[in-house]
Length: 302
Image: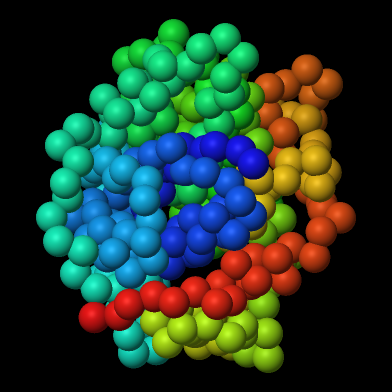
């Protein structure tokens, strides 16, 4: 069993990643929110609704509402204004945010509380704005991060532009700051995620809310003429939980911050002494494990 801090822009596959960690027996110390899939207000609403529906017990902290330097970029044109598609049911109203501490303060406190030998692993499954702010404002605390697992970037083509994956494009300046910080970084990129997918004949038996949300997620692929949908954030959760079951390529990652068509493009240069590892393979039936995490959930819809 491991303990993770999860930094998320809380769409459906972010929720799925949290459920995967719970399914795998891992603990979540805290959840920090960042704008990405939708606005921070909607991301927060999603997180609170998920806490009520699925009994998530980790504290939730609101973080960055916009990128470090640029205008906000969301995935609402693909995922809708809620930041998560559905076939009918939606997350319930989770009420107001009860945690008064902001994500930046909470994350610094968690990292600062680490004693000798304690791990401080972060699963980041959205734009890296919150993590970059930490690197900028508290570099000594950022050095307490024992492992940062990021679902983002692409060692190939993009999905939100021709060259850039969404989480990198949404805040390329933040991704560049994190890439240059020398943190122990494992990258679960777009290309690897596209090797792990599921189709309509693989849907698990689950409660109506989970089934509708998973169906809406699958429809993102089906409505674009694809027979399957790739698994993103839950796959990163699996990498976080079971690191020895994956293969890596040691490299240096760079991120384009240019104001042109390369914005958000990630480049991975092979090296023998880089602090970044790009995930390139696994011995696991990863899709099956991720889907199993949704079996038997009993969520409450609105």
